[in-house]
Image 1 (cartoon, rainbow, N blue to C red):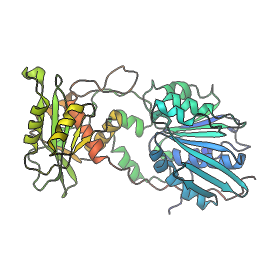
Image 2: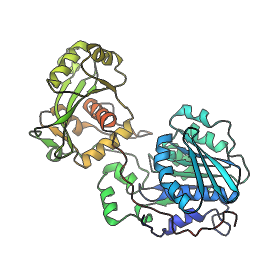
Image 3: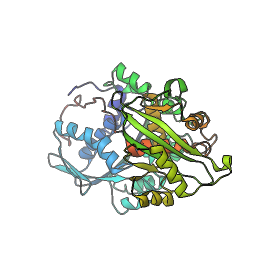
Image 4: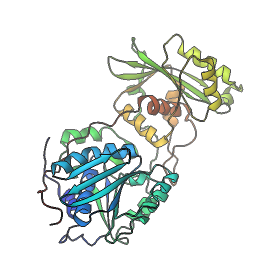
Length: 426
């Protein structure tokens, strides 16, 4: 385990609530900015220390977009540090409950996922002494406001953490722009605020993104996307005359359309270089040809594209129920209903393009054409690509999100050894 001193901004997060701090009369703290800037860990550590120092026998909430992301991004790095500092921690995954004790003090921290509008009902009824909302900009407003409404204990406070999104986002308008009005301590983080990141690691993250994703995740800016969705795509870098031989793990991806175009891609993996190759495609535009095709005709095209290859599965637009049933009825291929989270999928595809792990045969002409045409919707109140020239783009996203689903990278070390151990009540 590698120990490093805290940055000045991290120390401010860790101590803002203590008597004698110039920020101790604040009702909330909000940390936003670049990825890997150290904001989540120091905020969550400070949250537990504050709760233990100020309360005993109380309930608190730890909120993330999903329970899984909360456990992975927050609990897994936090618990070893708390135990190393002398806190007694017990996590009951079935109850989604973390119990933290120090001396005779003990508090309960319940985990909640704020994935969609229905999530607000999950947190109703509980009385809280404080709430921490990680990835708050990814949660619906109804869930966030319901969580804040549960904090009715005297002395309760709000703790927020997020990466930037669209500047018209409700959280930006209601909390970041109104931080002083809401008596909220607002701290903006960059990668330089995390001293555990080496220059090499910072350079690696800077190379992962471009366009609006670079401005948000590296520079930490709240900005609207504009221009090409995939500005990093280049025929010189991503198109190959001839995919290598010996490809394995074959998959098909499909964006189904009757009036709109139908796009199907064939993917193979090269063990030698770790790259996924889109080796061939089928693209039918009924408006262009004047011919509408049936499910059976599209199934025949899919089979012809696969040939004799041992295809492991077909990712299909989740709204194409009739075509998925057609594939299942023939009993040849396994149907994989696609994950259709647009922005998360675009981020995953962007990362793979930046790292050179997705390449395309020159035969995939319609795909290459769509990459050049696929653009963000301008002047929209939220992030969204234009609904045009997007059919191959959609099924590439389906394939990446459903089949590859890249696991989070190993996170750089960040440790809390700089704090002296002392009883919570002192």
